[in-house]
Image (tube, rainbow, N blue to C red):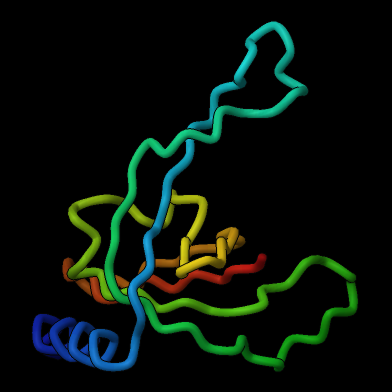
Length: 123
């Protein structure tokens, strides 16, 4: 059986060495005005986690034949730094002056050990 604790430590070490500080944010989802929900939701920050993230170009293997919005970047975030939060339910990544919208989030979790969050993001 693989040593997932050791693998999680390796992921954390590599991200700390090669990443930059980013804040992952969960926004509110209730309407600002319940009588006019079409005017948008409350965007206050319900929770946030700050840590190191590594941003890379997404794979070009999948052709955009259906014209759907694709990720501009993929962000990797070590699960050791999630502060007990379920980051796959969060909405934004604040990377310095750039705000990335999370299009898709995935948690790499072999067995019971959380290793890595993978976020597909776009501006």
